[in-house]
Image (cartoon, rainbow, N blue to C red):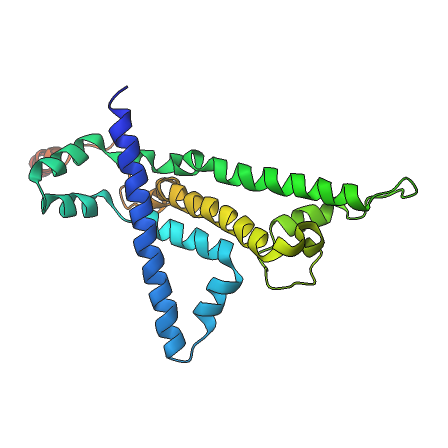
Length: 222
């Protein structure tokens, strides 16, 4: 049981470090494209924060353990042996579970604000809710915080920009962890499809018997 504690903390450390490095590289690449008068990558990052978080998390999850082993070897070789023995990469699929309180907090906060807004606008004479449930899910997954005329402004009031930005960041943080956790699962499913190793048939004779059988055939023919 005590062995899980260092493995857990190392996995969390590697996660945040990998995500930070890959995120900085992605922003630098978008900035370079922007300097080259190409707005495509920059617009994708700004307009689709959830998709950007998923891609960055997936790329961060592809950073192998050997990278950290090489970096730790520059400090002390014993750290490399310690990391290889712990194998913190095994906990990658659990990162999104460890950070699941983020998405739970986003859902809980959104639900409370939603029913509070409906309660303010509902009346005895109304037969339907002011906003249908389809708007509930659409608004929850919306990442546009620049439209001040949005109906969410009625829900959050003067703190619309701050609450909307916080809501998007909470979801993006969990999607980032989800992309990171998907890497081992995807590799486990996809890599066998491209493997060239095919099992030999059970009734196939070994190669060392081929010369003997050939000599036998030649003797019979004489």
